[in-house]
Length: 147
Image (spheres, helix red, strand yellow):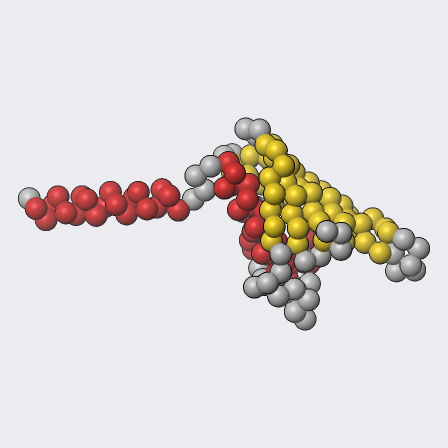
């Protein structure tokens, strides 16, 4: 009887720990999606994008034009972002331990969120949507080097 009770208690403790492993609040879910996004680039782990970025991603960036004439638009899909995440930091442009990962949730409702990310490359303003109970990045607009 005691062995059965201890086994049941251990199972309940394990289940309670498992239940707490995932994000408990919208704020935690939103922040985790954005941290996965930035970590995918710093750590060159494009697979992190699969659980945090929608396949319908639209990403628009402003970066210096090659000819020095000002800023130019750069559009990315999820596939483009995965390719960047896999290769951009290969020469150590960003130190994964010290590069900024400052996430500020500007506002959110039950289904949408607006977030500011300060990263090594600049500022990203990010829209997320709660799809099937999970926060996913759907839109990003960013500017290189502006803090």
